[in-house]
Image (cartoon, rainbow over all chains, first blue to last red; front, side):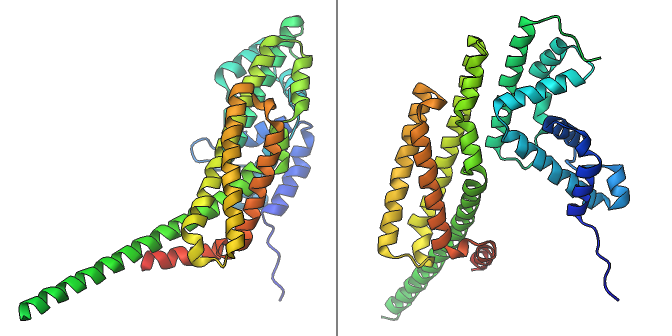
Length: 151
Length: 188
């Protein structure tokens, strides 16, 4: 009797891309979402839906793969593209742009969005770009302060 | 006479013992160097030298975009950040190349089948590359990330060439080879 093919991380990652990540147009949304599925204390990724279909280990690996992929793609984006993505993300959260920019500049929440095994240079480059992107958004916001959060 | 023979024998035994210890130390040290070199090669090839990353870090279009924003403050911040990243990049490349050079200077000649001509050419490449890295650091410190674009290309190309030669010349840098070697070294 032929052995039944056990779906692995590749299939789980495809599933995740197709059903969940495809609904997020921006890479930065994907990065933030995927980072949020990771336990801060253990570095293990959790996704109940995926784990139910595959297994916790396979789901964890698939989430980690997609996280690395999103980070790599964002790292390769131009500064202009990154500013556009960050602005889009800022408009999508229920916060005023001023409050969003202030929180991101002070708390630097983007630091926890980097995959664990990323090279320090890649992480530093990403942080540096985000700091510049935030400064650009702040300047734009100062020039047109009347813009509020998206409805 | 018997005493003399006895002391001579003890001396010879001690000498042999020290010789064994010295050889063992060198073998373990060589194994460590090999593991370090393999790691350095991997970091250079996958993290520091991919063309996409190098192009991105030194991309002129980012500078043009920032300048177009018309804010001196943002421009200064951007240049400061890029210069910091550029310095990290060049220092890390230099560090990893130094590890590879150490391997070639120390252990490689015992294990790799390198022709003298190739070894000399490699030594020259290492020397030039390390000097270029130092020069590039200085250029970045003085003039910022965008002042050394031509040298960046040269450094990246030379480092890539050295990685290729190191990878080809030292076939035992493959994972299984080094693991075998490391295992052998520790049991000697």
